Picture (cartoon, rainbow, N blue to C red):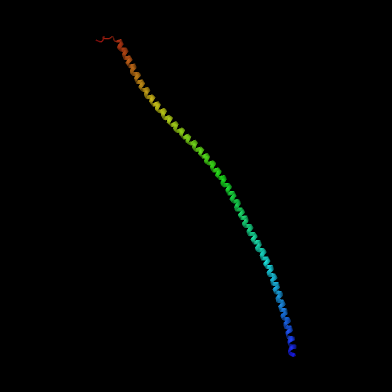
Length: 154
């Protein structure tokens, strides 16, 4: 009987102490689970916020790239239009300069033709002058012969 009483005296406090430790452990575990859940919720919120921020940044970057691409395409079309106009104006200038050059060549050819005609006319005038001089000399000589009676020299 002593052993039973003693056992009851010893076991009951040990059991109470063990129950208290077990309760403390359960409370600690419950607190740790709640902290873990709170931390998990906070981590999920932070990861969600980070993901949303990254997606927004990426979408903003994609939108910026798209806008830049549209602007570059418009500028390329504008540049193509200006280049075409420049090519047309350049073609017109080339045509004008070629026409001017052809006219200068024609003027040069005309000048050469005029100089050739002038040279030919001067030669012709000189030849005609010689012929006229010879004819005048012949006429003058013929008048002299007329003054001398025919056969009067004999």
